[in-house]
Image: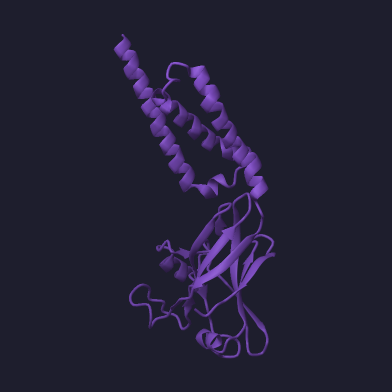
Length: 248
């Protein structure tokens, strides 16, 4: 009978450890989803993971193995309190708010340079700069990315990045580019979802048609026209942040 009880306890502790590891992996892999939850609800998966881990290692703690109340008081309650304090006190105090961006690299896809990766089949290039977008906010948020170029006539030309979901059933250039590049996880389409206190790095896709004064996008960059990236709210269109295009 004693042997059966020992095996039952061992199975329970091993199951708790396995579940704690599974929850920890799920938390790490789903920051966007967790970032949409209120702070108290967001703390619960981490709290449950901690409780399961504490229960799992209980038989390995010398001196407290047969003293569950003391173990809970000395280890369990403090760890649970730290989990709640992290989400309800530390995170709100550390959050600076806002979203910022930075360009890390510059790349261009054309029929002549695709090398079999993608056959664009259009008369203008696909610009795919690598951007690092950082959220310093408490909750997950979406941002749209635009590229603004001032041409030779001092007029602003605004290019919107390719969207994730394109309405309408008609085939368009944007839909074609989305279909060809969306298979590669390195490319990002708007709106870009930013988890709280995380940086998302990827290649944003812009379709660049000829500029109004007849110059191509390459020529516009070569002439050093002023250009910048803009991060905007998808619903209101309000400008969140802007940073310069660098000709890397």
